[in-house]
Amino acid sequence: MAYTTIDDPTLHFRVKAYSGTGSAASVTFDITDTSMQPDMVWIKNRDTTGNHGIWDAIRGAAKQIYPNVTYGESTAANSMTAFNSNGFSVGSDGDQNGSGNDLVAWCWKANGTGSSDTNGTINTAATSANTTAGFSIVSYTGNASSSQTVGHGLGAVPHWILSKNRDNTSSNYNDWIVYHHKNATANDKKIKLNEQDQVSSTNEWGDTDPTSTVYSVHTSGDGATNDGTDKIVSYVWTGIKGYSKFGTYQGNGNTNGTFVYTGFRPAFLMIKRTVGNTGSWVIHDNKRDPINIAKNNVDADNDSAQASLDRLDILSNGFKSRSTLGFNNEDGHTYVYMAFAESPFVNSNGVPTNAR
Image 1 (cartoon, one colour):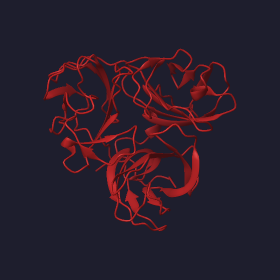
Image 2 (cartoon, rainbow, N blue to C red):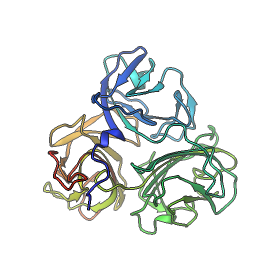
Image 3 (spheres, one colour):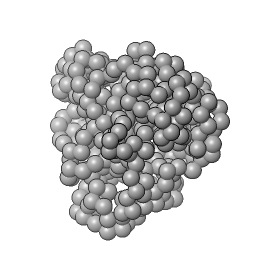
Image 4 (cartoon, rainbow, N blue to C red):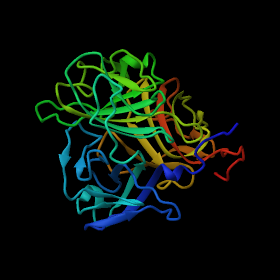
């Protein structure tokens, strides 16, 4: 039996580290023998204090939302300006293209601008689904009713959902809400991407597990999934063997830390402590840390510049904590993670790859 259906993860996900110019520029991915036009781009300036930004093909370039704060969507003409055939373009905004600054972008492939999904009780304005890679972008308008469902287009049960109210104003900002399938009783649990809080109870997911066609939304809670008639965007993933994994582990408080098996060498890792204490959403990737120990981390929940602390080893089949820090390895504490592959540990023909 084939180990993975995705031998080349770069067709679906890429990390790009680049230097800012301070003026309009095209950013091209490092691999050019194959191309990937991204449909979701997440950018952070590594050198300075500044907000993260997320753009997607459904909402369009220049339509920016900020994962580290509660603000609604804004139009920023000089931010990210285009999704290109093998990269993206940026304007002069310092958070995306500060002159002389080092920046990083994490980029996912969905299915362009998508089309309406009518499987749920709420029809989506657009659902852009890459079923091969288990990723979709979902845009819909809330209806202020309880126990509603929204189609995600994956044809498989979601493992991770990231949802944001785009329309909220300064008098009613809403949090980013995360669903993770490994949280205990996940259908009534939430984590906030823009905060360091532990996992908590919620009605955002309607106390109902997602299915292979829909996920549930609700009017109560922080309003991120079905608030009034506001516009909502969700980013939805399901795990694909050998390409992506959304799991959990317990820390051991030792520099010879917990080993977490993913089945591939991660190109991207985001880790969050959810039980035991608060903790940041710590992001690592293979472009900023091509060799071990991986130490160059940015936090998704704040605007700080990149920090440098020995954290973990990125291995051919997973990752291993090398720190006693509470952000990723406090004894007995529970952590969730999302990971995407640089290379599968074993390819679709059952042959081990050359990943380190």
